Length: 440
Image 1 (cartoon, rainbow, N blue to C red):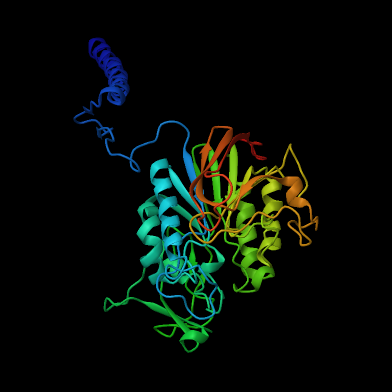
Image 2 (cartoon, one colour; image 1 turned 180 degrees about the vertical axis):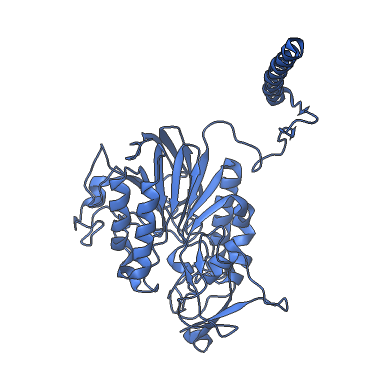
């Protein structure tokens, strides 16, 4: 009996040694693979098969800290310019070649950058973000990055713009979340009321409830869909982690949502954001949405810009580091600010505006009689805007380090309508993170 027990103990010990050795072999083989592209197959082990990832970007793991490409205000409207729309923002007419070239140039810039993910800060598709417009303009350039895109919606995806009535986010959510079909295989559609150009209605595909653009509620909006049911409501806020960073995509398009910018819909988003920040233990945090609270054009979008102060207050409370916006068609970088627009080098949040994806550009305005911040200071931009340009299209690369970040905005193309000044523009630098309120 003792002999059997001794042999049993010896067998157990030998098994443990074999297990340790096997795991060591796996680790050594994995290390060897990274250098020599070898692979290891352990027959019968629960670890399964292990093999290297030899595929190029975007499937392969990029070495070093992850890179987030940031840009917004991108794709011109395909087709002819419609009556009542702002001049020069569609793919035909006098400025058509410039706009097609500009969105292609920034798309090429992303291709060259090979980022881990792409954060789109709204106005992906002009003028009113119909699904067909996404397919015929945005898809032809930025569709190359759809797999790695993390979008936020803009006003051109949601509501009244330049004489046309927006599509309540249907085109945006259908493009990113996918289109639903009826039992007979036909595309399920929704009819949105209120468009004077099409007899008071606007018909769009119905998106899936959840997907790449966040949640889309299937009811609660205005109008009726193709089966006589209610029109949905695009929520669209979500968060995700990349490296040591927590990233939050928000929806500030509140004007035509249930209750507007002071009602139940926006209140639910603020409640979600607070819970998300309470549960966040990441070393660094960034949030992005479309209309900025602090405007390099000195022209705050109302009511969205002032409403977004509520985002700022929560983000500041929970020690967020960056806010990324679009809407102003330019590049701008502010020094760290508190929610009231006061310089705060210790706890302040740095705002970037990167509305340079392809649409017509706006000028930087440093001093004006209008207000660029909630305090009403007409010299706000002169005091707080550290860098900016309204002459170039381009993309910002944001390297997400373990406890900090590096930004690098590079111009992709200069606006031919602005021939004077420098031929290129670059803005780069580094910053450190505050660390979360609720550490582990």
